[in-house]
Length: 425
Ligand SMILES: Cc1cc2nc3c(=O)[nH]c(=O)nc-3n(C[C@H](O)[C@H](O)[C@H](O)COP(=O)(O)OP(=O)(O)OC[C@H]3O[C@@H](n4cnc5c(N)ncnc54)[C@H](O)[C@@H]3O)c2cc1C
Image (cartoon, rainbow, N blue to C red; front, top):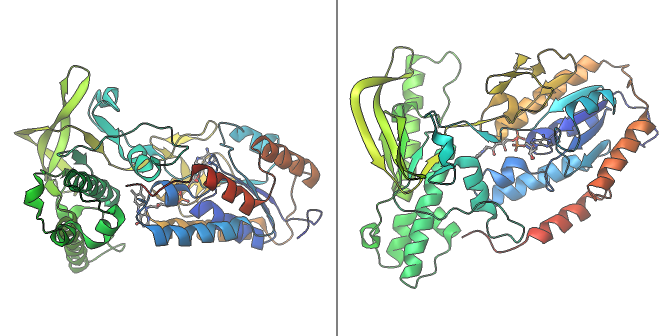
């Protein structure tokens, strides 16, 4: 469709990654003009910054999918433009005149470690998962200017989900590489991720015990069988639940066999161990599983865990955007299935920002569901409320402010080359 053609609607999409690109693709195919706002240079979201960098093949495949969707006819991409930063949410509806706004901005805020005063120790013994994985993926790039995280043996990880297992893997792989380097052995971290630590050490004629490492420990407040590593179907029977529990146990055991981290179940963090202005570890209380399946603290049983570093990996929640109603940690929704945001009839969310699930397929599927619902909601003879030329003037002006000339592939090549360097080791 050419720029002068009549579109069924003008749609703003916040976030250009898995969910945003999918929504743009689907709705442009339905005759809508989609403008995708991406806060970063590259629109790959958690595919680039959440999944640890060893997922090379998956990342390339996902990059290709996002690229093809953001370059389809009817989709305009605006990088380096955060909504709530360069452009306000209110401007989208009232100045640019979009008919619909779709939130596909994911979940980038770490849920706070539930121990009073903990955040005073951020980067002084306490690290959160999102910046930690971002650092792991990007710290060797020329443009990386974030905090650096020296890796310590004996780190305590608080978590239980798949992302926390990735954190434990990073720690184990990094400390093993460090020990091998001390012995004059240069070991590729990504190869070790594939082969596992014991097999890799065997190739060098070594055993884990030879390295003198304690390893990191993952602390989980519920039982291993409860870890959100596999999902039970809705209304699961007791047999199905037992099967899912055994899958969860097997997933964890496999990861432990390959990466040799420890797991301590049924402990909930309740206090901080500090020394001066540094966090030295955590105090945990024993828990048991209550009748409703939640972890309940058992009075009297406490352990103090001293650790050179604590990494909290207990879930990611959406960053608030001014103008959007929040319900505690989440965006307030009338209807999760279609992502309708309370108090608006033209603002919808899709992907991780709504599902809270750390899963590419779940994000894409939810986004498709929302896009299909919106295409129907618009109706066959919908027409945009704002003039196309004035909207496109805003688009071009903001693209120019971001130094983006509209050539997507050139842009990706340019910003990628600027950051280019060796793979993180
Ligand atoms: C450690 C870890 C490991 C994982 N491993 C796997 C795995 O093995 N397999 C799997 O399927 N999934 C995995 N996931 C989950 C998966 O990466 C995410 O669920 C999925 O990528 C989310 O896609 P999304 O498009 O919904 O959100 P995101 O990828 O988060 O995309 C949101 C986009 O919105 C942009 N944005 C945010 N705020 C704004 C704003 N205000 N204005 C403009 N743009 C904005 C962001 O920059 C980003 O590009 C993992 C996640 C983590 C953290």
